[in-house]
Amino acid sequence: MGYPDNFEGFAVTDTAQWNTVKKIDFTPKPFGPKDIDIKIKACGVCGSDVHCVTGGWAQPDLPVIPGHEIVGEVVRVGDGVENGFKVGDRVGVGAQAWACLECETCKDENETYCPDWVDTYNDKYPDGSKSWGGYSSHVRIHEHFVFPIPEALESNDVAPMLCAGITTYSPLVRNGVGPGSNVGIIGIGGLGHFAIMFAKALGANVYTFSRTNSKKDDAIELGTDHFIATFEDKDWSSKYARKLDIIISCGNSSKNFDLDGYLKCLKVHGKLISVGLPEEPFTVSPGDFIKNGTLLGSSHLGSRREMLEMLDLAAKNGIKAWHEDLKVGEKGIGEALERCHNNDVKYRFVLTDYDKAFN
Ligand code: NDP
Image 1: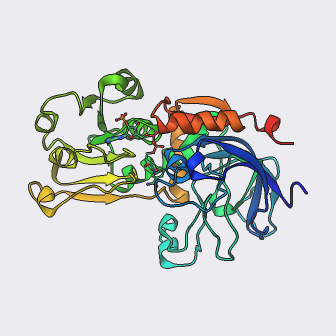
Image 2: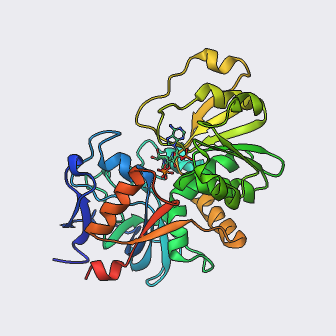
Image 3: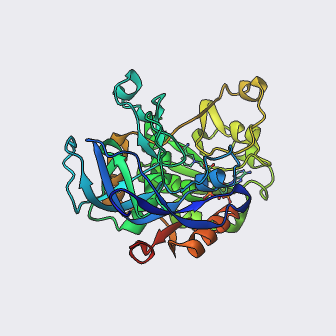
């Protein structure tokens, strides 16, 4: 059985062999009136894919097919779809597949915080069906989480924006970042490189914190105004004390993460928003916050409205992912997961050549 009853994808079946995938057939959720089927053309490889398949956050529901930065073509539209999608449209899907859209949280455009939200992969819908990600031939998603892609954006340039981009754009705009804001960005990876570009596009003065000087030239090309190598610069936290309104932390590890140093760089009541989700906790005490009354928080993806705004901003400003492309398949996915794990990518892998991997 093939499409539309079964899809094909590349699955991790054992966390001990997280960089090895094998092709499987799987049954997607039952097709509902609001669903859209998408034939996948490209998919980014997110740091979250690595946390998931290694079991670093928790044991995944194996087999797991990761991938939540998807661009493809609409091949089937449910009869209750209202957003005007039609067969042949080029669309994107990010890290969320479903929310109830009825609770107060959803009605306030906070659907990424719906208590019943469903992730694009390694999650369960209310009816018990499993969600499967974009290292696959197709994906089936509720229309609210399907986004039209502006013509000006190439598929491989935009795929990583659907998770990495929106996750940084949302906290920037929700915290009022604009001309004259002083914004710190921690970690130049998939999320961090977008954070620099979006903060700059919004008019902010950008201060980028990376562990070493190895990414300095890239950070400058991405648009940063200041660059700080925290493992190499002496006294960086004193030098930049009380300069920043907000810091967006995109770091994926808490190893030697100098939280106190970063908090020192915030103005009074400044915020550090960690969109990064390290596997080990930060160690904090109220004393870390009292000197300048700072706040620590987090942020999850971004709403549909923010996603459409971000895509528009990217199209108008020529913002694109920096990406390296690999063919979807055992070899390409294995290499992408392994190198992403080793922080060896500038700054996102995009899986391509879907037509060759799937019939
Ligand atoms: P990448 O692997 O592409 O980048 C991670 C970056 O973190 C590295 O490039 C590095 O930057 C920085 N880093 C690593 N260790 C440390 C450390 N100890 N201290 C400071 N910085 C560090 O990952 P992604 O950008 O794809 O993802 C980043 C994180 O965001 C992940 O934890 C991921 O799960 C999470 N995420 C969260 C989402 C949300 O909704 N909140 C959505 C998507 C992802 P450098 O070399 O410059 O120091």
